[in-house]
Image (cartoon, rainbow, N blue to C red; front, side):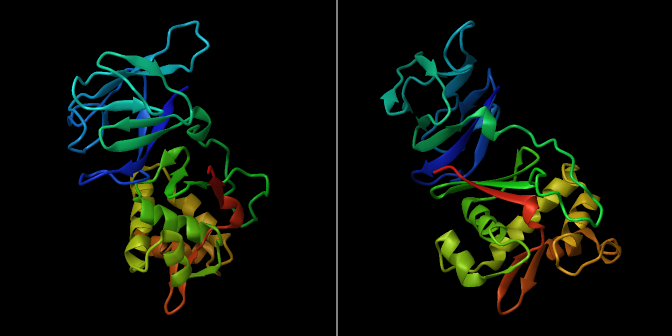
Length: 264
């Protein structure tokens, strides 16, 4: 049992972005210091601002608590201020305000790792199979995960991923992606960010390249496994998020490989 925290809002300059996710394991310190377990790189956050502690056992409370370590910077849980040394329970859906950073606590059900087998042959995916990519949307916040691991995507790129995942294997026009992102800006850098995040999964060994080739082959894009095996990694990622110049982009995944969850 553990929680994650998702950044909902950041006020003022800093290196945090809406939609970023952090693990909240028992014993972790939250703060600005580079050496803490949960680093919130924002000037309003103390170097060691708060600590995650275990709830007393046996107890009807949730398994984790948060303790205020800061004597000067603010710490609020669901609008209630915690004084220095005070602690309270963390529950799914709780809102934490640490300095000028607003976080939402995500419960264990949203962070369980994906462990169901995925077929790799040319047969269609079983309709009952668990999805490969799961996108969670809650208002403007959006997170994308693979096998329980959240992709390193800023909020705009995550919303662009969600727009593509809503119509896998179909062309999604640029203006539809812009509407989903909430900006009239250029879409190409967001697509590049998506490809880069998936590449990180491949580079780290979290995503098997053979699995990715199999999913693209099952997407109806017309690519066969034999032709995909000859592509290098960058070319394979360009096939995953395919550019249709003058029209938009296609996420080359079968429908059962993606799932969008609207939390709000």
